[in-house]
Amino acid sequence: MGERAAFLALVFTVVVSFCSAAGNTPRRVECLWPLVLEGTSLRHPNLPGVTHDQKFLRSAKFGFFNTSKTSYEELFPFDDRFIETLVMGNILYEKDPHKVFGRRGDADATWDASLKLLNFVTAKLASHSDGQVAALYSREDRRLRCHPIGKSFSLDNPREHPLAILGRVLPDDVLLVELERQPTMIGGFVAFPSNWSLRGNLGLTLGQIHAYVHEDEEGELKEKYRKQIEAMQRLFGPETLGIPRVRNNWFVYSDPRVAQYPDNSPYRAPVIDVKNAGENLYLRMEREVFLTFKVRGKMYLAMFLRPFQYRLEEVARYPEVAGRLVEGLQDPVNAYRGSGFNEVVQAYLRQKLPWYLEN
Image 1 (cartoon, rainbow, N blue to C red):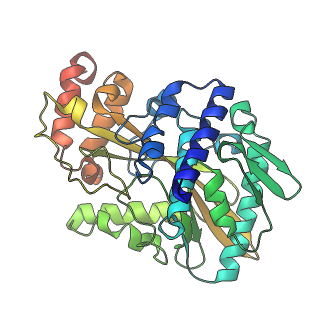
Image 2 (image 1 turned 60 degrees about the horizontal axis):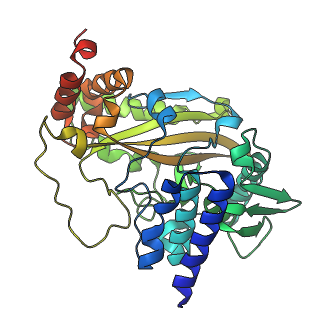
């Protein structure tokens, strides 16, 4: 058995045994079968399957940059893909660390900021008030054991970057932003399925990263975009130090893969209309948590990202969610989030829920 196949077999064995011990359903384990059987597959467990975590869907807001305060206990909540996503991030990292992890700028400053963040997060994980999360980790002195992947990490290992360790022990991806002068992305661990590239955004300011949102707009709408992004950056000022905030980032897609690591086969989406939109359109959301902190007098922002994906027909089961989504799509600032399907999405939801959406 080759080294790669042996690693995948080990991962599968660990996940099966851990999920069985935790009483998880077979569905979670079955999502990893293609990885074990094919050896080279890089399909993310959320794709093309659908996340079933209803708590996040039912609480979702669909503004441009809605944020709200949250507690430290809510930084890393347990959901029905927690273990899978954590394991998948490690598989991608083992295959090619440079695609998943990267850093830029002052190496010492990035290391120090990442280490402080790692120490803070690992202490929270091992003592988490939710027993489902706390059971996944053990911390003794300066070592953290992550049970789902069967690995133990030294928090003082000079050969492994603390930001890479953090990415490996969380289901959430992590971005690190330096807030001096212009907020600039200096590091990250990104394994979630997305068209977004970590490598292409390292070293850029948040303004540069979000420029595509309004670059083709003119006049009043372009100015509205600019003000929204400025308001977003003000949320990372000194007054927010140590106060975690949470946000829902959302888009509508017709391609359920939307992956950084797509296979070679082209995806041919059917012609989508009101009749088939429910099964062929997907609401993709990212739970984003923002936390500011200081190291050696410098302010930093940590962003924790966790993806969720739902078929539109599932969204229609929750009238209050469908209503908020329609309202969000009607705001011109959010037009780009519909990926060209704004009218179809609204027509489908109104057809399914006329008694709710027409009032």
